[in-house]
Length: 128
Picture 1 (cartoon, helix red, strand yellow):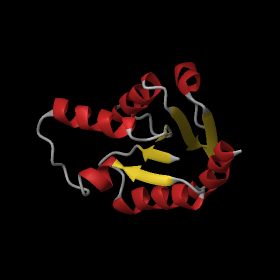
Picture 2 (tube, one colour; picture 1 turned 180 degrees about the vertical axis):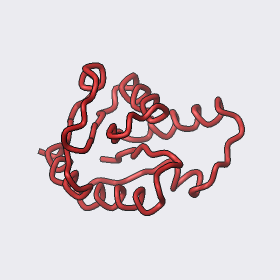
Picture 3 (cartoon, rainbow, N blue to C red; picture 1 turned 60 degrees about the vertical axis):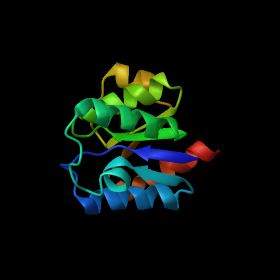
């Protein structure tokens, strides 16, 4: 199973790499748009082109992982695209974070964590 990991340029490359490593350690193939397409640089000047390519990459994946701890906006659009395409949506958040019912409504799995590494155990439930 290939998982599209959402992130933003506000996320450090180290955090993105950590998330990708956690996904791999749980037994899945990882994909990060910012890492794999943009190489940690803003390369798109046309937002429509950016979102079209994001949609195409989501189509190639089986699931999408979104961290909703910091109230994502752009990443939420990616989650909506994944949901509309019939992909699994994995919502992760720091323990105690409140999320909207609409987010829970598109989630196939919700994982709360204290440390990012806690996500791995939750992801393994997808394989069960």
